Image (cartoon, rainbow, N blue to C red; front, side, top):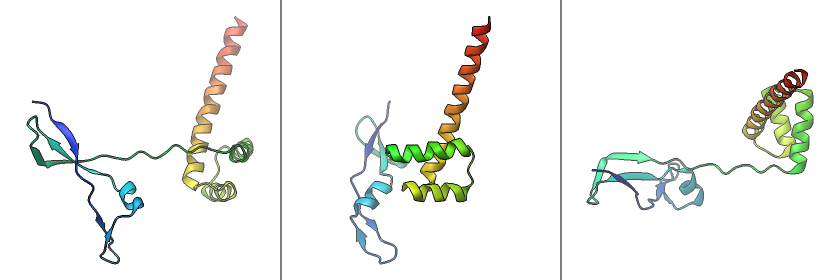
Length: 125
């Protein structure tokens, strides 16, 4: 007897500070929608409520941002939090995005080094 998942209708949230009901776009997009599990006959099982996470949009870096990030990476592959915050402010990004960019760039750098080392070994044989 397979179960299907149906989203609940959008429910307004309550602003804790003022106690008023909010219809804000930000509240609706940042709050994960509540789901209820429905059986094959459409009945709802309230005890099986699940949360569905909303995905963050992928950051699209400008050429100027990438140039600044790459230049900094050439000097320092492991910047501390203060350096990342300064760089983030300079390129107008959140520090978290800069941190993830460096993590991904280090992975790319390791992959490139591994591939070039493998090419050198196969070229010598």
